[in-house]
Amino acid sequence: MGLGDKISNKTEELSGKAKEAAGEATDDKDLKAEGKTDQASGNLKQAGEKIKDAFTKD
Image (tube, rainbow, N blue to C red; front, top):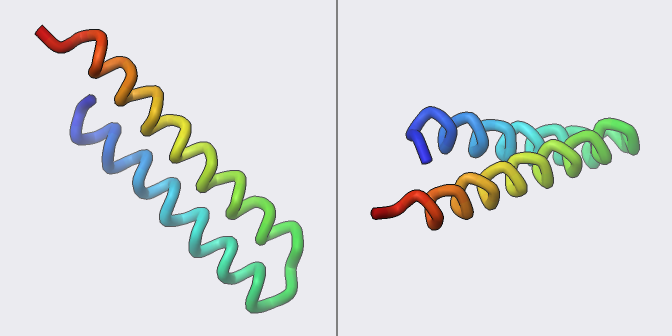
């Protein structure tokens, strides 16, 4: 997995956490849900990259 991919996926995950926290603080259910979705997306991308790495190791 490239460093750029790791950074991008982690950024998406952290952005989702921030959105979720903002949604919680402002009682905005849509923003909170969007944050959770972003976190899940980042986590899935990370998992996919790890699987690719496992199959491409020499």
